[in-house]
Length: 407
Ligand SMILES: Cc1ncc(COP(=O)(O)O)c(C=O)c1O
Image (cartoon, rainbow, N blue to C red):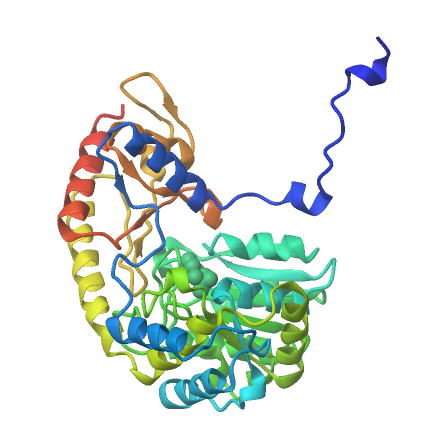
């Protein structure tokens, strides 16, 4: 046999795909489902999804949209009524002044983020990603050919990156910074003062743009939500992303949006026009109703998320070695698990990484969580608190027992 005949055929897939990874959140959810299918009582805390139904008034608006015949293509950037409702929301809740031609409605905030990254980042550009970060940021940067520069916030500062850290990370090749506040996975919320300091750094670097992911805006336990675009000196360089998935429990509807300087919004619209066109027409009509209803339905959910956070922290803080900062928003706790790395499970398996620990917790406690590696924080594990109170208490009781068995 010739030498070439023994070689595996080259993958037919494009290089960009071979460089991409599947989100760890989705991979863990899959493992949890497989175990549950075998009859195991798995408590799945790997999801980044509200466990509430979409409010009835939004569902009613969708049914009406269908009956009224809103079933055809829409303008790429979204129906005028929704873009106007988004402008009204920004003015009312964020004191931000946008015109409808600065808004692009997308298939989830995920597409809005991808639109912005792919419209702004050239191959070789550096993108400073505040870390821990949401899993898809670094993959989107990779897809654009950019270079992710991870900037890790410290546990002492609730994992929040400081302006001083940012200053040291910016080079002449930096094009963009990306962060979420409230943050997935840490639940940290930037204060006005902290964002003001970050804005001051950006003001000194006019080539740097910012992507502010505000998808968890409504799930905030400290009160004030601050948008980076509120800082006038840099507002022109901020792309603000938001959506309906978390605040209105509408993950399956796939509805998000961005607001930006008109030329950037037009670029994002152009990009989207070649990939997906306007998002679902019925979801867009429902989105108008959602925004017109304000945030009352979100406030009810937030009461539950806060109570659950407190329940979880109460148990988590009794687990020796687990260092769990208090989340100020979103629906996750993100403890540092360093104290358990390097230990051995009762069955002899070594717990070297946070992924080993997450897999051990799934096998022993039957609790699914996501290792911090995927979020740029390899010494942490993310647990969702978007589950029923009794499930959360039971999950952390089991976690405590399983961690107690490590030697
Ligand atoms: C920080 C962050 N940004 C964006 C998204 C995407 O949201 P959407 O469902 O609107 O695409 C998520 C979803 O988990 C998220 O956690």
